[in-house]
Image 1 (cartoon, helix red, strand yellow):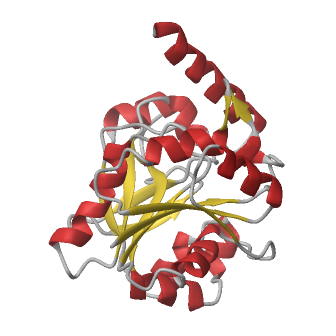
Image 2 (cartoon, one colour):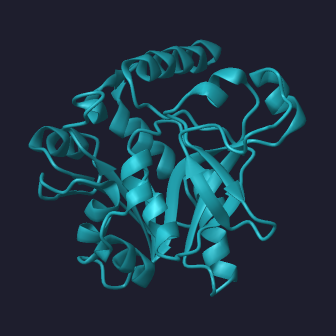
Length: 252
């Protein structure tokens, strides 16, 4: 069984009540749920919440939703908590609640390596950066990976450093630079191993929990996707998402 879990935390430090922020006529968490529901590979989709307000809204749009302790600090820990209730789930997909327009094909792309290669325990997505704003945005972590598509490092800084490039535009024109799309697929044992590990130095420095996996020697398979996603981390991101959704509605 492939279990999809959308962690939705009310007490976001940068955007309080983020899952309930309205984008058009729907809260963001509903957009995410409806987008993820289109996956062809996920067997069951659950929203994991920490607040009754999100619980009630999710029930209103008929989602399967579970309450989790509000002292759980990370999405991965919240997913591990939920996964214990689903012993048949051997592959677990962490779908960020702040990706309202995620393409279901992206989810299936990320799942596929675990279906075809038993040596892969964790996978995630990368998208080639094609504009300077994304390159400069620290809310969009960058990723470098080896010739076998396993992650080498994630950073909020621009990596790799492009020596000789005089401008940011020159960097993206001369070198393939990728941003990380925050969707993870775990084998069950890899999820519980990861969430049992202590936070690490690089994780604390960059505020990126995936670095904990790398620092402890876990390998992360990178799938390059052609589908771009829009993550909402700040009020500015939310406004951008609203404008994007309005364009979609206006075209219909």
